[in-house]
Length: 476
Image (cartoon, rainbow, N blue to C red; front, side, top):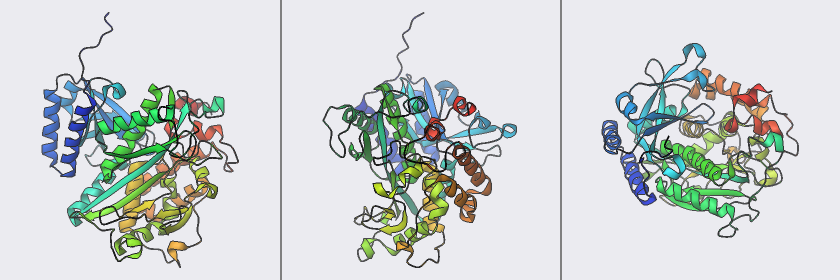
C-alpha cells in the first residue's frame, strides 16, 4: 500500500496571512451572516485540495475540542452537525446527550499545514441545544450573544487583548508525566527579555510568532518573560469573541509547536515555586462608533467616568469572579504577594499588585487591565463575566472601594464557596451552569491539599483541566 497522501492543501505562509486578513476584515466590518456563509462555502467548494474542516468548540472549563468533518460531508450537512454532549465534561447528562454545532462562518482560518496538517481549515462553532437555542454551557455562544446584543441595542463594540504567559519545558508531555517525575525542566535560564538569538526558547517564540502572523493575528511583540523558560507573545486588540478565539488558537498552536520541537508548552499558572507565575493580563475597552468610551483627557489617569464605573463594578464583584478568573488549584499559588501577584482588590495606575490596573493610554489605546486572570481560565467565560459585570453590575457600598484593604482568596476552596453563594453569578450564568462549574472545580480541589505548601504537588497538575484524561481520574 502506498504511504503517500494525495496532493492536499499546503499554502505558503504569505498567502495564508493574506487570506486570513481578508476574512478578519469581513468580521470587523460585520458583514452579514448570509454573505459570510456564502463566501466560505465558495472557498470550500472551489479549493479542491481541502480534505477536512476542523470545527472547534470549548467546554465549560475552557478545554478546546476539535472535530474533523470530511469536506464533502460538511458541505451537504453543515446545518445538522450533531455530537454527543454527554462525553464533554460539564455539558449534558447521558439521558439528554444530543447537541448540535452551528458554524460561525466569520471565525474561519486558513492554517499552516506543518502545524495543523495538510488539507485542513479551521472554523469555530457554537453549541446548539435540542430546541435550537444557544446552549447555556457553551460560553462562546453566550459571549457572542451578549456582544451582538450590545452592538444592536447600544452600538457598543467590546474589545479585548490578552497578554498570555506560559512556560516551555523540556520533553514532550511534561505535564502529563509530572506525577511520575515530580519536576519540570527548563530549556532556558536567560530571564526577562534576555536570551541568545537562536537558543531553544527564542526559536520556539520566533516560530510561534510566524504561525500567528500567518493566521492573521497581527503581532505586536514577543519576548522571554521574567522566569526561566517563560514566554509571552503579544498580538493586537480584537472584538471580544475574536479575541477569545485567538486565546484558544494561541494555546493550541504553541502546544503543537512545542511538541514538534520535543518540548511542552505549559499554561499552568504557577508550575514552579520560587519564580514568577504565568498570568493572562486582560485588557478591555468599549467603543461606540469608533470612539473609545474609556478615554477622557481630563479624567483621573485619563480614564473616563464610564471607565471608572466599569472598574468599580469589577472590584465590587471581585470575590464572586475569582473562581472564574482563577479556576485551578495551582492558580492560587500565583496569587502570592512575593511575586508581583495581582491579589489586592483595588485599582491603580502603577501598583502591579492591584487586581485592576489603568495603563497609560491615549484616545485610541485607553483601556482597563484586569491582572488577576490566570492563563488556564476559560477565555469566553472570563471575558463574558468581566464585561457583563463591568457594564451591568452594581457597585458595592465599600468605603474607598478602589483602595480598600481587601485580598483575593489564597486557596481554591474559598473561591468555590464565594462563587457558589454569589447571586450575581447565578444571574449572569444561570443556577444550572453555576452549579456545574462549581462541581467541576470541587472535584479537582478534593484531590489536592488545601494548604498548598512550598512545592507543587502532583495532583495540582495531574487533575488540571488542561491535561485531563479519564485514565488519570479513574486511578484516584
